[in-house]
Length: 278
Image 1 (cartoon, rainbow, N blue to C red):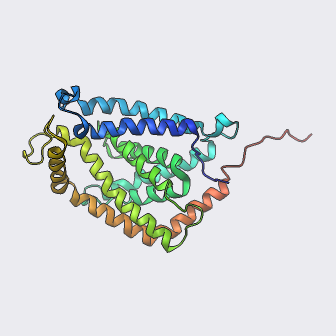
Image 2 (image 1 turned 90 degrees about the vertical axis):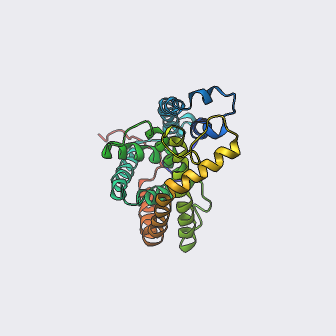
């Protein structure tokens, strides 16, 4: 039996797929839009429109996930124990993020998000990743049109960690290697995805790395690759390296603590109330 605090039901999966589809469009429209697309004529304001839309979609997904098993007559997806654990981990993630701010992309937050998603599952992971980014933005003053994109991207990172194979059987060095590999890959991928969010409307760049609305996909892909290499790879690689180091050095005790917490919380045990004894 699964001991994960936020199980994924059919409606939750549908909501996640829906917001992910819109998220792909929000991030990738510069590469996906054809020359005749209406978005090409709004290359400066299209990201802002998506920034207004994504918070609403994220709220819908979190609401759907929070229902969890309620549709099936079981315990709610987010009960008091789940909310408490979510609050502690989101606060920890938000506190870890500023530690590496401005230091070559070193963000220990990724390590905690990957391990939490691994132990607690994709549903909890998506909610945790999104809320941790929101809380860290409030803590650091990083609220802006990029925040919904960061929330969605980090939600994907944690969700992916929860979908890694061998959650109940793989342990020891093999599991640490799996998590370190995924952590490094997701750290670089996160930076690349976030580049797509800002690339279309950052002005003053050289023509060789600028987005050209309506240009063929291969030409814009070459410019985007050059943009990533010259602007963010120096941040993404240190973030990936730190995640790998933390996975191998601190992964075992953190995984053990998270699993001990889920066992003691007994999320799958329904809450019952007994009448007082007279």
